[in-house]
Length: 219
Image 1 (cartoon, helix red, strand yellow):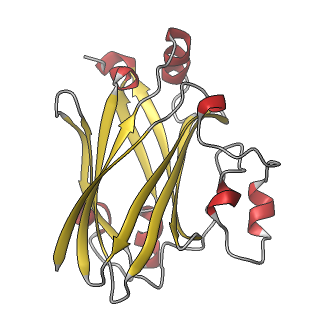
Image 2 (tube, helix red, strand yellow):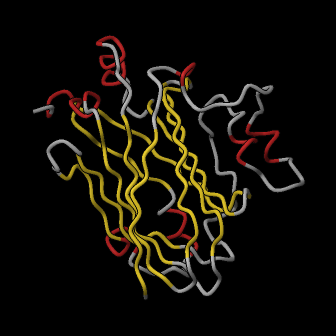
C-alpha cells in the first residue's frame, strides 16, 4: 500500500466562546438520532455538550476506513505520551463487531502537567479500502462537565484507494486557569471528547474518549 503524510494544524480558544461552534440554534443528541437525512458538520457544531451514546451504529463504513495506529506526543520535547497499535486493542480482527465497539472508546490517563502543554501532536495511521475518499474531515470537540472547552477541525483531504495514510494533527492547547486544572484533576472522567469523521459532509464514524489527569504522577 502507498503511504501519505500530512501535518494539520488548527487553533482552539481558551474557552467555549472562542471555540469552533455554530451560531445557529442548539441541537440535542436525541434530535440528531431522529434525523432522517445524513448528519452533517453543521449539525455537529450545534451540539452543546458531550454525547452519551454514538451517533453512528458502528464504525463500519463503505470506504472501509480503519484506524490501525495512534500516538500522542509533546511537540516541545517530542516525548511520547500515549501510543497504541490496532492489534494491542482488539486483536486486529476488523470483522468482529464487539471488538469494533471496544475500539470506538478510549480512556486516557495523563499526568496533570499535560494540561499545561502548549502543543500536542496526535499521529494516526489508517487504511482505506478500494474506494477513494473525497473530503475526509474530522471535527473533535472537548468538554469538561458538559462545557465546551475546545473544538478542532481537521481536514484529511483526499485519500486514494488501497492506501495506508499517516497524518499528524497538531493541537494548539488552550490555556487553563489554575482553578480549571484543579477541577479537571479532581473530577476524573468528567473531561470528555467526541471525534466525528465525515466524508463529503456526511457522518460516517464517531469515537469517544474520557480523560483522567493524575496529580501524583505529574512529574
